[in-house]
Image (cartoon, rainbow, N blue to C red; front, top):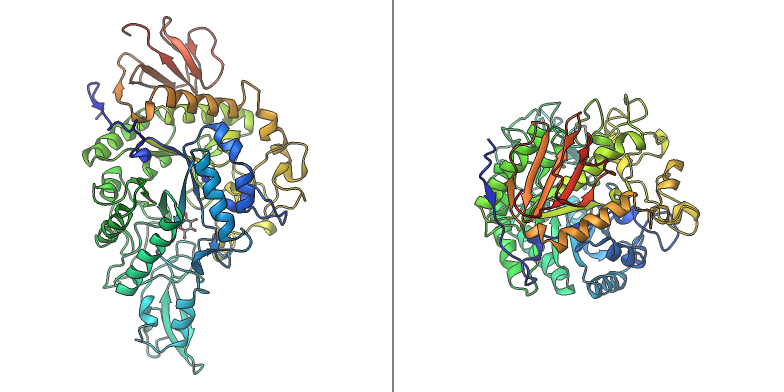
Length: 562
Ligand code: GLC
């Protein structure tokens, strides 16, 4: 386990190259960020209008969840045209303008690439339906004959991540019941066949399309899922485990060794371009040792540390995952990529204070017990962020966490939109609770999300007091804390820094040095004394003297040898 003598060093990126090793990257969920058109769904012009606020926050890059042409059956993760912008978000010209404006503010831009599946409205899938079994058009996807006397049963027992079966039967052109196609997600999201060279060539083309426009990289959706076990064996997942994988014995559609070849190929494409472009993988695999396989030197640059995201608020667990992450990633020369929230999980402000757990992707609803209120969860939410942003490596933030937003568990059932909710007939709530449009100005319609007051998911009234303009200038606000942490992190080079465990603290405390900064997070229930002769740079909650209360983290500047 953790040894007090481990020191993890990261390559210096101070010349601006390899920016991704230490960058703080802010995830924008375009539907819910800012809506210039006023139709109730956010858009690219809305994002461009809020770049000054992002610059003020101090982020290095933004990741945009999908804004490409899509029927929006899975909020844009069902792409019908990979090289165009969906009209609800704007136009390619709007994208170019946003990219240029972000770059002018020294903010890099990463776009989301969804290679596991397309929309059923993609030209290729429509052609597949029009063509005969075994045709080149059909072989771009995973079509199989059914089992049973007349092919009336699916090819195997695989279940969709969103619930229900992972196969749908089509009608052939002559109207007869036909083959089945695989969709790990919604039936509107058919999986590509990645053993097909045409699919590989098409994605190289798509990468180049966006690289030519000047994007700084890609977040790669379901990066562990593209290749399937070609025997298509039956498989029943553990019902309590995270829906997106993470089993010790992987599902036959996740973590197949063949995926790595695809990213080696993509890495070569990125290296044709100047400007240090990066790939970040969304690979829900069970341990950081496995995650490290995605960031070997000739593969991706980053992979989200989901084991960290899923870790409970418990000191020994946190020390263990931090230690194991840095060991696993530095062994392959990659940075840690820390994350606490995104558009698929319960917002961490709420999640870390829940008494009962809800598996990833299932969400929580009005019947969930003991959902904490803002004042109840705030100290822990702040401490968790102060701890994460002190770690060397890169970190991702999800829009709204800088305002201390909670999971909206109490939205009425009729407004829910996540396919998980429909496919499980309301058994799993899904992810709408973390996707509600964020509040900017307390006194404006839709709290400044747009000028019309429309909102594709309703905003809770309690968010009025969390609007950005209310927090701006309030030294004790969540927004001020995030701004301060990001400024200090940059000033002291903590992203490019080192981690050395600090000895002498109680079991319930996570304490380490990152360069000249001593970071102490009190995860226990009792107060802890902090060194009297160190300068407090940041505290997640106001301090009383040299006491660090429960659920509080502090960054101290060491003066002399402590
Ligand atoms: C990823 C996305 C999620 C989406 C799924 C299918 O997990 O993050 O939002 O529903 O892939 O594309």
